[in-house]
Length: 306
Image (cartoon, rainbow, N blue to C red; front, side):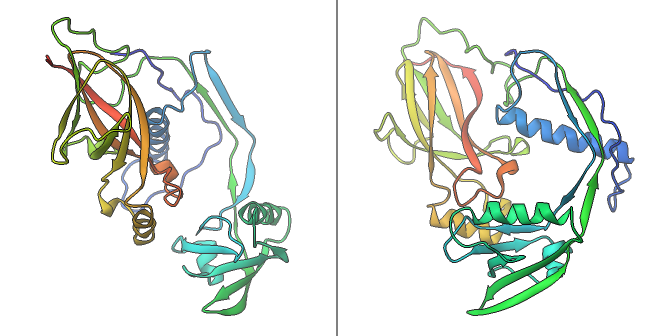
């Protein structure tokens, strides 16, 4: 097994969590599970700190504004509303999917930097009376929506991350880093793409489009032989559509079902590498840019190859 890092939450001071409908767990247990899920997402993404030792994160109590609004990228026509959180501030103000935000509290949101200016307006609300007035384009007509946006008080927190051992994403005990030792009797390695992937770990099937700029073989192949050494794989995702909203699926379609990504890999002789597409749920608002997924090797298995 490879030596990597696992984050252990030692202290979280002053955190409060309300009960979740239908949940029998205590607030503390629910909080621990939420933190654990967040750490798992960071681990899968390779976004954990290195081996520089314990890391301490401290933040004072703060009041923030959560508008409950998903908008598309900056546009000269304003910020396109993709969706709102049910019961959230944006829905209470009357915003709907398909609206275009032209201005907020007199600040123009059209053109480059519109989303950043919107965040600045929302940041100002925590220091004022919370009143927000929006200029909206709806069905070709300009409208004004106004109301008081509720803010949320986040308690102070302290999290300490310690070094420990963790395993890689995968289901096979032979998977690990450093790579499996090469097989002197093998002259090649393999890439395998399967429909049966560990979906409980957000790994879904992928398609191998090319290897080093060339077609890897017949389109119905699921296993591909490669010479030992470094190769560049061109990969596209085939993540289940039910993992996305209807708007996100439309964005995927525009990109050609998620577009494609490159993955560099060092092939060892006598090793089969299982290729998949990892869904980055922490980047659920980046479907249009294609950053919501990445190609991964989720398992390695020793297998003689000639």
